Amino acid sequence: MNDAALRTRLDAILLLLTTNALLLFGIGFRYAREITVGVAVLAALVGYGLVRGRRSGALP
Image (cartoon, rainbow, N blue to C red; front, side, top):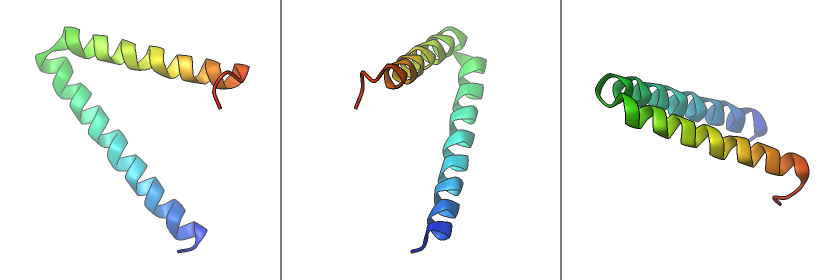
């Protein structure tokens, strides 16, 4: 499999995962707003920690 085919497949997978996450957050905001906001904040904090850790060289 060449690079172009692999990138196309990975782009399709990323699009499906993003769509799935947005759909789940949409359903969550409708039926369980507090929990969904909590999960979103937790995910943002973990993501921020990973980005800051990579910039400072703390993570491999």
